[in-house]
Figure 1 (tube, helix red, strand yellow):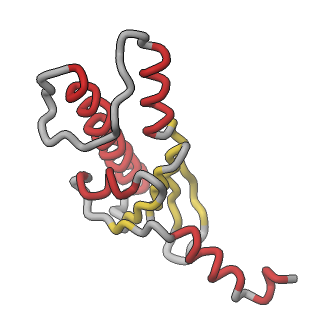
Figure 2 (cartoon, helix red, strand yellow):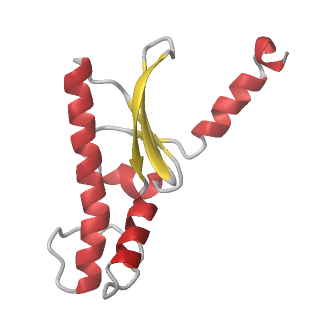
Length: 133
């Protein structure tokens, strides 16, 4: 199982079929990446994080949106491909986190978007008697 959490940082975590953690990746989040671009490239305006269906933008805003969002999708697809080669498996992919809704539909890999994955995990833990001790 690959869990991709698109929050302040983007994390990709790999778990085996029993739920044991086998490793992961931490990447700057999409909002942090966008904020760094706006702050460091003084002439570029802040833009809304929206999916642009075309890669090649025709103005500064559409070019930035494509670069940020399409670029992030491409980066994640590259990471998924590299992880699959490393582990020699094609695990199920679950997307969660605040920007999961934006990225999940555009990944070429089949995935499930679950905005409440963390809360579901906490609920399961709360039902485990050994955790409550």
